[in-house]
Image (cartoon, rainbow, N blue to C red; front, side):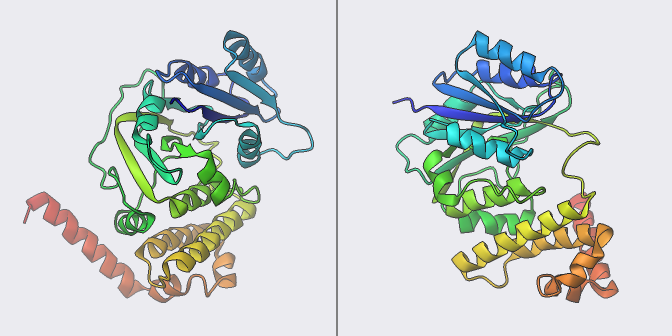
Length: 312
């Protein structure tokens, strides 16, 4: 059997880049796909390009977001999920690129697996489509995981994350885990994919394919440049903490501690008032945020660098 894969692409004012993304879809060696592009009321020539692809191949389905729906990628993705007919879902940003065998290799890895098994693959960054493709196989999270707790514990040690485009997920698992949180304007992908991994029974790593993630420019929406985004980042991790502690009964998680340190440092630079208003959430970070603790961390980093240099 060759299950249908629904590729969901939210797009806004991408006339200069979206052709590269859609070409990578056309080049897929796995042919049983539909590509749903949700245009977020673009004001450039994006719609002209999308019409060309729809006329070229009827597997491209272009949807103009209705005026009654708010703008934003999460809303677009949820609209795509409502329309999707596929058994599996591939999310794809409108400036990123799939390797030609991406869908084929990952659907093979999920053959005869239950719907709560997910597949991920290598991520490589690029600026221009003709840049050399450099694949890093040495990341510690580039392997299979027998359960979600095993994955989170490793990330608690090394940090990092899987890029959203690297996932291939069953529609059943998404419906079970819940769709995108439209109230979040920052870390909506982190919160969504946490729920996906959290509810998965196994993670399969495909080392024979990859996605290309375009390095963002100064207009990146991930920049913490508003109180709304700062509160979104904070609230996303509050949700994650509740879900994590409820399932794993873990009050001393290295995963949560590492991630909350990141949030703490971001808010401390930009919106320290939010730290004061959320003292209980940041109780460990506030307790450790003193000179002696910082010197201790610096000393550990220096020792580790020396150990790597001199191999002792």
